[in-house]
Image 1 (cartoon, rainbow, N blue to C red):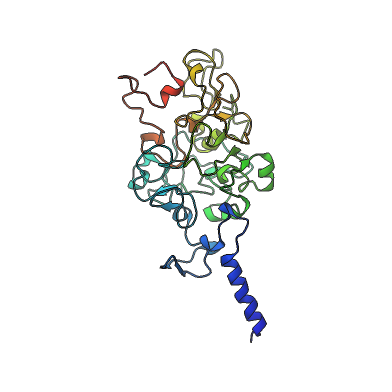
Image 2: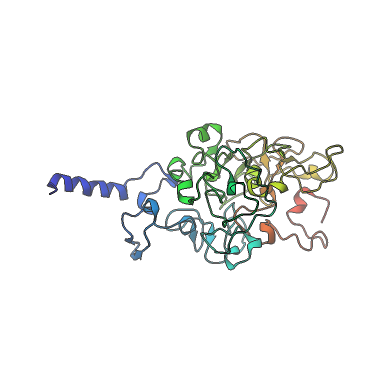
Length: 356
């Protein structure tokens, strides 16, 4: 038999669990993400769910989906809009793009994560099994020549969290509690030393960067993410750049890009490569959201300055692509078809300023 004091203590602990704000992402209530039972009321709605590990109400995509805007009922940023996020300028999707277009089955417009679609194993284009060999936080796909499993949000076959565990939830466990999302944090060696995933940029183990306070929902040349990149990092020597994150799966797109003797011609579009201060490229001097650049140091505040020929003008994978998805083929930030010509200006024109 329990004593009255024990029962009272138990009730108080439950109340504390669901009402006390804690050191967690976005400083949200525990009950925004967790439930003590698989049946609960929220906002006048009765939800009945299948019990999830770690008392979570849903999985990665379930927690980050919604109709419109930047956040959903969980207080989480929306990366999968259930209604078409029609382009209306900054804020139509967040910085990483959106899974909306891929959810219809078009794998060219987004990463086909298992949490959202079931399309079977697809070996990533440019897959290099050796790209993450010996990587501190685990090797993606265990170095398989062809992937035996489908891409997931996190884990061994995913982007976020540690890569030494198949279960996405275990791979990212505890990270949200170590990162004050929404507080404009900087991910660098100090923060990663405290927690390799929670202290990293966007829970990408070991990756440096500066997180925008609202995930670029409202953004401008002076209000945006800051990415980390190193000029000439095609040999993976620096494993903290945002382009190395992409190289984990698409390594051949990040390998040596030109003739070792002459430096030309390019065989692949360069990444982790400094925009030169010459010819048409010298005109890119103000940060442009259509073609973001990386920096060779971790900025502690967003900057609108781009200086071709310097370390604050590094071309990266995300200069042209979105991370989650976009409405355009190959997850590009713009529709390159029909360009150049007819005075059409798109993202390519930001660097190639004389071609339109």
